[in-house]
Length: 82
Image 1 (cartoon, rainbow, N blue to C red):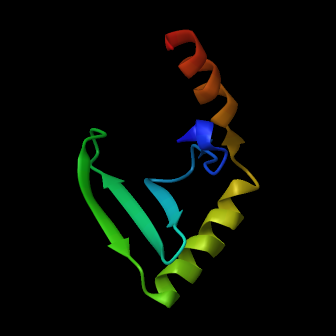
Image 2 (image 1 turned 45 degrees about the vertical axis):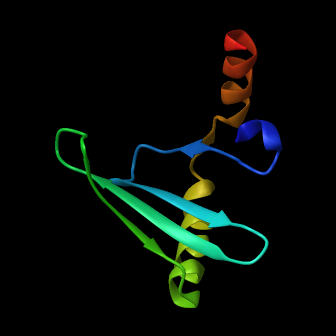
Image 3 (image 1 turned 180 degrees about the horizontal axis):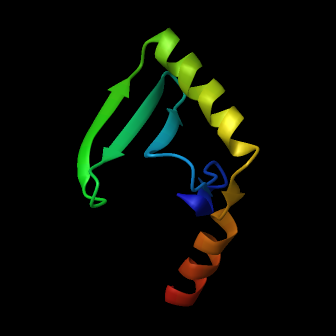
């Protein structure tokens, strides 16, 4: 995904969930992935309503300011493994 140039990955220590905003030519979705106290997948929520996507975009933008981007690390990893 990172090699397409349309994907950016960020990490932050202060979230208890993963947040994705997935957009295609005709739709957008927000995806929230939650984990249990041992770090195992507990569930996922996918929503394409306008309100949910607006919330997801706003939450992403707020959190991105304090996050560390690691997209380039993914690309370097692909080159090493490639």
